Length: 523
Image (cartoon, rainbow, N blue to C red; front, side, top):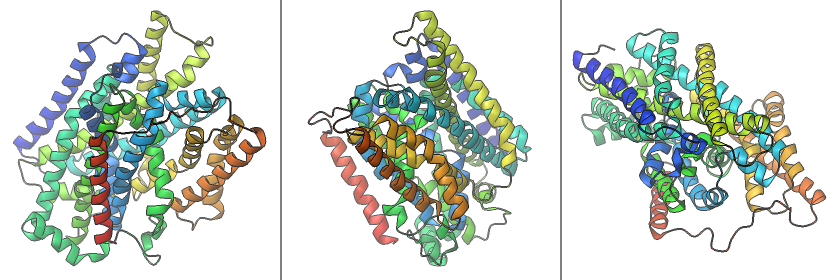
């Protein structure tokens, strides 16, 4: 990409500003306790919760990966975004009331309260490995690929630079610094992302709406939300399963049980703020395909000169974003990468420190002394730095990926069916036993791996759905054998505990209505 002097100043200025802001937030209030560092003192308002949810979610895997899938698949890949909007409403209404009442810091902590330390430790180890070896590494790789494609920076140097950028506000400042930098970055992310979409659509048809109509006319096959079996991409998005099958498992796991996402809601001032922030995020999710999928479809229609699909978004920035705006559009991409990286690093650190290290170091449990509390914060910072270092070492090895977004979804799907089954039954079925949950933890990855090896033609979304059903059956059978009545650690759900405000209800109806229209129009 040929950057003008203005573009370079905008881009460099953004990086310097965000790094400075992150450091300022980190130093503004000395972190005194684990709650300060890992849960931002539990003081987040709804708009910070919602903005940080989206900033943490949207990263290179969407800008680069989902645009690449849009280039190959089309609008159908946006099912991940649209179904996420519906899932956020379910999580806000039925999951958050229980989680916030329990006063937990992490998802594994809830599992110990509901089951025991074996279940907590087993899934904590899985999560740390998943964050470090799949999430952090893939985001670093995709970000490095963008820097290489757009600015000619060698991949390894781009990866190192992104890690240093994210470290300025993910290591020293904890969740508070991550969230408040997210709030600023989500504004640039959405504005800069929309800017790129508007400009490429103008290149296609002369204006935004005409450009969109032109895309539909020239590539109608790219606007089918439900793919037919004859479609070569059916293996990744198997027809109706995106509405009634494994897609729900992927989204319930990501939005309801995934530490680096749910941690924002756990840090809210109260339940109402957490729920309103979550439904605000649902609104933004409906908008996001315009930013992260449409550029990929436009690149296809414009016969983009790319070697692999994941180069579609950098190609759009290179060729169709006007001089003077390239710096802003690229700053939006780096903002997305930085916010997601910092969130993943913070959550990997949180789970390692509180769910793996703390039980080993302080075996007596209970309240910690101030010195012990500070010790945990120090361990959190060290583990955050180590997770970034591992990501930097592994990220360049992902160079053979074709569609990185699908890679992330598939390998996250090795653990998500078991996690969702454990949480759903643990929350809402009082007879669920500890051994049933533990057996599910043990079986989850081997079961998915067996399906992939012995039934490779099965779409991975269907694999997630089938694995969930089998693991649910395991939970039911083992629990019925072990528990003749209510489990002694069962969650006691209060009558009226799932009531929500009129604002939340109206917003939820609006989101679901928009989703229904989209699927009816582009069926």
